[in-house]
Image (tube, rainbow, N blue to C red; front, side, top):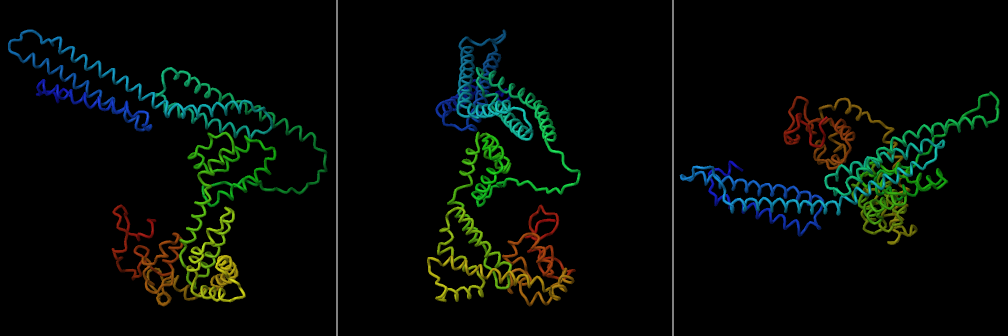
Length: 513
């Protein structure tokens, strides 16, 4: 600022200071009016901007003082050191004092708003959860159940870590009157954990004692070896975040948990539920902060259990399936099984009407191959089958189940009859297209329009990487451009990846190896 002030007149420096004061005053007024409605990020940003604007005012004030002195020294009749007038000193002091007071006042206002609206609840919740868990762990009486104590102790460590993290985040915004008390609470939690960890020895000692008592109470048996049957323990089902599986998972979990823990302990049920939910979901929804399994189920239900959205998702996924051809028995079986699974999922939701909608039934019919579609229409026309509009979906599903076994057998026959022509192709088609492939059409969808050009096949784009590689190998296409050409020929640049970051030529539909 001193360099910027050089060469400016006093009047210009006064103008710079007036501009800085106006900008500072506008920001002060804006914060004063809207601080109660600001978000956490907006309040912190306003705090930083306030400091910057105040610094500009103070620097402009210092530059003006330097300008006054320079102007006095420039007068030819001045032999003594330049001294500011009383009015000039008062003006400079007033500006500095008002700026500092207003800065301190608004900073305090922003701190109080941040703490009252955001920090207090967040830190208090974390501290209360950690303190309550600390009391709970301390109240557990040492017994032989060492694993349960170790589990709840690990959960306590997680909650204490969360509380310390929240304290570090809000440390600079905590009012000075309660900062010492909160710091003391954090220190108590840190001291509590090592003391509770040392109690593990008591649990291990009780375990050893119980095992010894149990062995001494057993009757003396024959030394003849007895056959031992080892049963694998049944684990509770784990929820990974798929909405379609939520209600079925919840029902199975509650049944198995009730059988495994007949005592009905709320604490054990809560910890078993947390262990049965994916860690990513637990962190995202902060499930460890809830007190009971019922509260955790309520949060999970709100996120994953909306039956209407699940039903829509099931139907839309079914409608997105592509139509299948007559020469693809495996695809036909997969379509039938997808319809059966969608119906079963909707039965679990209690909303079968979503899939029995005439539009959905028509969409399923349109995906059938021509031969199967013809047989279905003949089935509908037969009066003995009594296919009515209201029961059209049920009749279609019954018809498809009968066809499923037939197409399963057709698929097995195709696998059990290796073609000599295919063996020749797999052996010699590394970079050259064979005549048999040309006659049959596309190796993926059977379409003759793009039989030698996999990059035009829509169905090829939806295949998994392993299936894509198998199709390329069967066709004998080039691994770089997916076209069929001689080994010595160059790849057409039109069908190569145009990403400048790729160091080697490859097709856009295949990732870099």
